[in-house]
Amino acid sequence: MPCVVLLIIDGYGVAPASSVNAVALAKTPYLHKLLNRYPSLPLKVNVNNESFSLGCASGHMAIGASKTQINSANTDANLFIKDEFLNTLKHAKKHNSTLHLIGYLHQEDEYNDLEYLYTVLRITQKYNLNKILIHGVLEGDYNAYSKIIQSINNLSSEIAKTGNTKIASLSGSWYADDTQGYWQRTEKEYNIIVSENSKYVFSNPLEILNNFQSQNIAAHQIHPSVIINSHSTSHPKTHAIHDNDSIIFFNSKPGSLRNLITAFVNQSEAKFLTYTFKNVSIATLINHNLTNNTEFTAKSLNQSLGKIISYNNLSQLRITTTDAYPYLTYFFNGGVKEAYPNEHRLLINMQSAIHETKEISKHIIKAIEKQEYHFIVANLSCVDRAAHSGVLKNTIQTIEIIDKYIDYIAECALINGASLIITSDHGNSENIMNISTDISDPKHTTNPVPFILVNKNLEGKNLEECEYSGHDLSLVQPKRNLTDIAPTILKLLDISSNEIPGVSII
Image 1: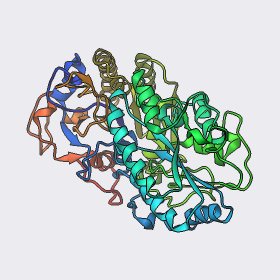
Image 2 (image 1 turned 180 degrees about the vertical axis):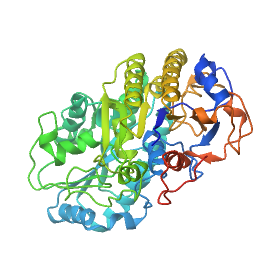
Image 3 (image 1 turned 135 degrees about the horizontal axis):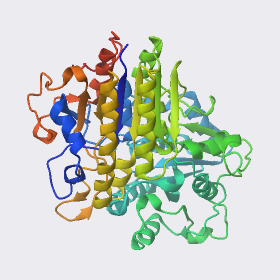
C-alpha cells in the first residue's frame, strides 16, 4: 500500500507579493520547483466563511478531522445548564463563598471567550452570590493593547451593573497558558490566584495595561498582576481562593490553560508546590482530560483522519516539536487525547529553526525509507514562531531554511513511491507588518494556504479546477478548503469512507 506524507508548515499563507510578505520575499527555489511541476492550488482556511482567522488548534482540526471546533455549542444558556456547572454555583451560594472565573478576556479568534464570560455572569446573577472574582488572561503583541483596553472597558461596564463582581487579576498567556513545559511560568500565575503573591499590585485593570504598555512589553507577556482596591490593602488575601470557594474555567479553547487547571484538579502532576484547599468546587467549560468529575459539555468529533486510518489497520506516525505537540495529536484527532492503535508519536525538543527543521526532516526521511508507516504527518512550527516575532528578516530566513529540507523530503518521497502533501494550518508569515503604518502585525490571517501534491505519477499535471501552472498561488481564486485534505489522503491510501466531511481534491 502507498505511503502518504503530510507536511504542515505552520503560519505559511498565500498572498500577493509585497514588502511585508516574507513568503514572497524569501528565496525558495525548491518550493517553486514543486509548485511548477506538481498539482497545486490555494485552500481557504475560513472553512465556514468565518470572519475570524483560524488558530493552530482549529487549523489542525480542520485538516485532521474536517471541522474547526470540537464543541459546537453556542454561547447561550444551554451550554451552562449541566449539573456540574450549576452545582458549582450552588456550592458558592450554600457556603456564602466566592466564585472565581478564570479565562481569556479577548475576542481575537474563533474562541470567543468574552461572550462565554458574559453568559456565565448573566446566569450567576440568578443565584445572588456573595462575590464573583474574574482572573483574566490576555493575548496579543505590542499592538493589541487598544483592543484589550476596549474589551476591559466593556467588561467593566457590564460587571458594574452587578454590584458583586470585580476583576481580581490580569496575566499574559506567556505565564497563564504556557505550552512549552515551563512550569515556573504557570506557578507565577497560580500563586496570584491562590495567595495574591505578586510584586505587581495595582488598583485597577487599566493601570496594569498602562504600566506594561509603557515598558513596551507585549500583552501576552504581562506579568501576573493583582488588583487590590485601596480599601482592601489591609486584607492581603481578599481576592485569592479560599476553602469552600468555587472555580469555573470559562475558556472555550480545548487544551488552553491546561497546566493551570492541572495545578487545581490533578495536583500530583503539577511541577511546583500547590496548595490544598478544602471543599472547593471546580468546573471547566470543555473536557481537558484531567479528571471526570470537574468537567462538562465535553464533546469530541465523531470521526477523524487518524481514527479512520487506525480502524483500517494501517500504521501512522506523528512528528512534531514540544510547542506544537497538542496540535498534531489532540486537535488533529478531533479532540481525542489518546493515540489510536498503530499511531506512533515522535516529539522533538524545540530549539532553533534550523535544528527543528533538520531533525523533523531527518525523521520523515528515515520513516519513508524504512516503509513502516502508511501515513506520516509532521508539523513545522518554526515559520509561525518567526512570524509572531514580527521581525521580517528572521521570518524570511526561516522560510529559506525549510525550503532546502523540503527538497530532501520530496526527493525521498519520489524515490520511494510515496505521495507528499505540503500545506499549512493558517497564514501569518505572508503579512508580517501593516503595510500602511509600517508597524509589525504578527497574527494569524484569513489568507489561503498552499496545497501541493508531490507524486511521481502526477508530474506535469494540473488539478481539474486549477488550470494555472506556476509558483504564485495568489493568482488563483481558492475554491477548496482545509477540510478537503483528509478525504484526499484517504483516497491516496485507497480507503473508501463517507464518515468524514469534505471532498477529495483529486
